[in-house]
Length: 350
Image (cartoon, rainbow, N blue to C red; front, top):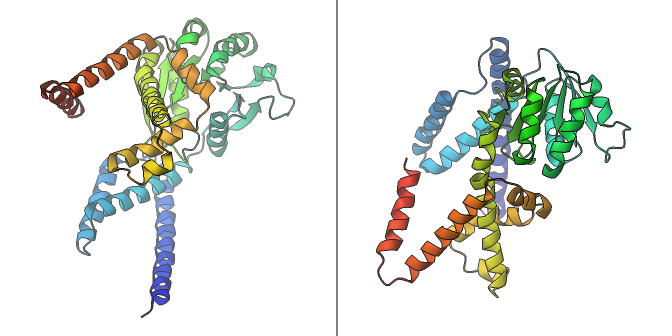
């Protein structure tokens, strides 16, 4: 049998696999219909674990690696949960206004809420639909999706425009500059703050984190949470003052490490294409994230670094860690280096 014939047989198997995945997905939609009709949560992590185990066991009978079968099963589960979550429709559709809705995250929010049956209006000069912030006066929900530096002023304007029963929340990456306004507004109206912990490329909420910040109005927290609930993600509720401390590490430190890495590489004198020819497994694993950070909006990343009220502590720890690592790696005695590595191992084992 020649090579072209073998490749054609593989192509036919690929077509069969795609057909079977499609049929499997259609069955999961029926499961989703049943769950929605009977008030059963879309995601069940215990069932997901059993499915992955089943695939690993089945694969072993055909000589397939557990890792491969686990990856395949996880991908199928993600597709199923994502499809099922799209079946959820709002019992009480709302009029939603998204300020800055032409931006990437604003558009993501618009698509999600529209698919759930809400009536969404985008208020953004880029759309040229004639709508302004004053048109939020008739909205049931107003979402602020503007640059970090503009969040506070936007909230202040909305306080004079929106009805008292309107749910208002921002989706900003940082809260420091708006905490005072959020707390003040929450005393007299439904206001909270939300942070989707993912970018606009996310196809669904599956396995994604969403933070809902409590600004002093429990009803606002519950209503905002309900918009994201049961769509395959995980929701964390915290006080608004806690948020930026977490973000100084989850966003600020992560961005700083990646920016430092590609800055060192750029200054090293080695061409990137040349480095790829000698790339190690560890180096290659980090490249996707590193290149992604390098392609992001530098003004947004500057604000994430600059406007976080907890930045000084993070930078102090980061600088200290780099200095300790440098000192330990130059010392002829490996004890300090080993202690640093062992401490990291223990941290991740908690």
